[in-house]
Amino acid sequence: MPAKSQFISLREAQSPFFVGIDLGGTNIKVGVVDDWGRPLSWLSLPTEAEKGPEDAARRMGEAVLKAIKKAKLQKHDISRVGLGSPGTMDIPAGMLVNPVNLKGWDNFPIRDRVSFHCGLPVAFQNDANAAAYGEFWAGAGKEYHSLVLFTLGTGIGCGIIIGDLIVDGENSHGAECGHIIIDSSDDARLCGCGQRGHLEAYASATALMKRAEELLAEGHPSSLARRFARAKPQNRNTKLIFEEAEKGDKLANQLVMEAARWLGIGTVNLLHTIDPSIVLLGGAMTFGGKATKTGKRFLDAVTREVKQRAFPTIAQRVKIDFASLGGDAGFIGAAGIARLEHRQEA
Image 1 (cartoon, helix red, strand yellow):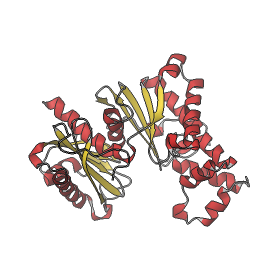
Image 2 (tube, helix red, strand yellow):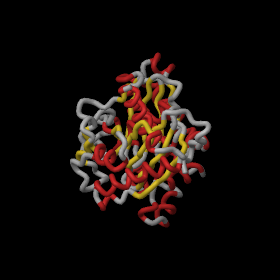
Image 3 (cartoon, helix red, strand yellow):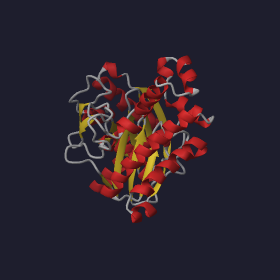
């Protein structure tokens, strides 16, 4: 079930209605929302990427119809479906080009195939942009005119919204801000994309784990050494760093503060380019958000770095906060993009 969003009844809902699909490498989330971005129903299914894109498109279409039925609506009540997907893509063509986490899905017309299987028009967008639009429409950014969302996880996704403009770029590669360069030295850290010095190489969960392993190998004392030694390789993640930071471990807190510093530097680059009203931090690596000591320190450190480096007027006025929709932002935002496209064509 959605962790942050609250279901409403059909009696409370405001038409028109939209369906959002959040396609991930492991799971697919599908939900029906009303005209204010409030969910009426929600379901999840495994992606099973190895079965190929056509099989997934068929199951997404079926899930759309199930979600509509679960919301006590009919197919004709739905104005449009929105689909947010990872990977390189051609957004105007509705095409996945070379999605890294979906092997074998290259050059697949996913928008039109999902539309075929559900019998409804489908709007298509990058998953990070969809999540950003979800926060802009119905989440922590709904009181603001412009927004940047960083999704912090294995990598760093980003979405930029200015008014009702989603920054796609000429080649559907807009807002790839996890790959802005923050270190131009020859020995800068290597990013997962193969280039050096990108923000993702310094402030993602992958980067944080690599940095932790380096410092532990150098002999820095930390309770993390024991936690890492006991954990299975698949369970060694930033959750362990967060837990030890909460307990006061010096190295764990150092790692969190390093990530915050680099993220602050990356944020300043965007502030001086876009000048948004609010910057939101979301994804799996937010260290518990405002509910924890570590999350608060993380946010404060990012904010402090911004205030030290940004133009004074921007530093004083920009709001930096955690996103509020959690894992729901993707399907809510995808539905919001369907709503935006529907309204533009009306």
